[in-house]
Length: 124
Image 1 (cartoon, rainbow, N blue to C red):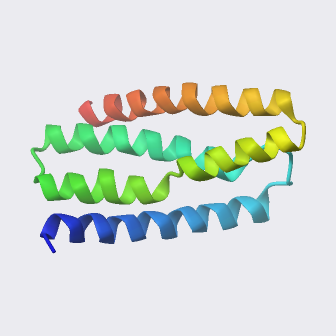
Image 2 (image 1 turned 90 degrees about the horizontal axis):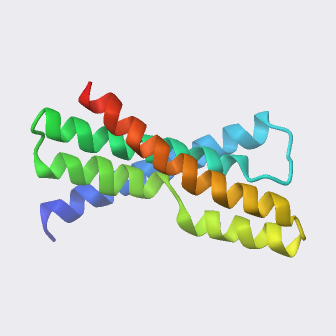
């Protein structure tokens, strides 16, 4: 097994554990609505972080393995497209069509803006 795979493996586990902690926190503190706040939060935060990590790795000439650990591993494990998709299907099945459209558009739009913002902050 190459050392790159090990970095990604460790980062992915770290990101997944962090996602679980954020989701536990969100479910304990936020009144459950028909909007998937926990998934929305981790995906937006992860979008910001991946932009930040890429910018910082370029700015400080970090080794490729560090970028793999942070971006592919941690952010890949932290964010969750599959849960986003499942949440969307749940909203559709529950006939929350407006919430589904809002969730989808906000997730994609703000996610892209968050990645750009992270990149901007990392270059500053």
